[in-house]
Image (cartoon, rainbow, N blue to C red):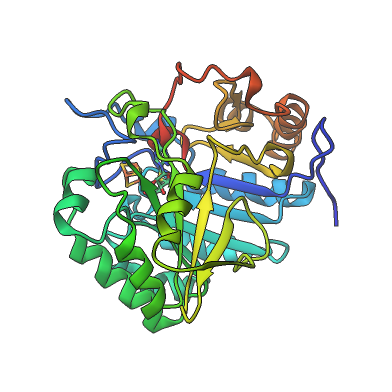
Length: 325
Ligand code: SAM
Ligand code: SF4
């Protein structure tokens, strides 16, 4: 098996692919508040054929895990066809998807049949009003129906991602209850200040979250459901599920970083906190695709920063819906 190593000797085997910057929600920490967000034109985003080509050539170089994200991946037409063709790539060990879950109840069956076996659902609150406040327009029951459906079908693991915001959804007790009733992995994520809508006064660190949770009982350290990744996992005795903590702000996981991100408009990002991007769409459309993929990966491995120290933390050119979380 080929392997990719960056200039800091980290093995890079994980690619996150954003397939659209469009979304059916408007989360306050991700999307601008007033006016329509500026979405890319169709001709300026990678086609499914280009995504598949990129992934298949990247696999030949050493990528073995792919996550589809967005924007909201389930709003792009024929997403199931893309999943079917990617999951048919023999050397791809792992394909997963991150969704806000709004359309999941309708899609869960066909996603499973297309080869998707595990899923991450972003859900910041189990309270309908708080959910509406965070997503601006979301209907909580649609997401809950989707979660119910993926459990019935047998997706495993099912992970829920919750960005914790002070004074909005930092009462984590509903999520604890969920881990007692379902074998679900709830991962609490520190807010990253990409958006101008929410200030750092809303930031809650993972250690503050753990302190809060410890008041409900003794948390015990446990293994990651997938054996790797940036989250630290814990559980309450007797719970079916776990609680994970992802701390991009307070405790960087740069030394273990194994990922690259491909944006919907075909730019390769080597670090979430860096504005640097390597153009992929141009080289893929103008050169032999396999050579183009090899070359952009070579550049990415050379440029991937050692850590966040060079990042301009208060001047991000894109927020998460444009990057792909
Ligand atoms: N729309 C899909 C969803 O929400 O799951 C996929 C894309 S979304 C950009 C991916 C993840 O990024 C979500 O879990 C979301 O909560 C997270 N995210 C977006 N903006 C964030 C921010 N400013 N800080 C931390 N996480 C953020
Ligand atoms: Fe859409 Fe996901 Fe961003 Fe929310 S976090 S606005 S669901 S892309």
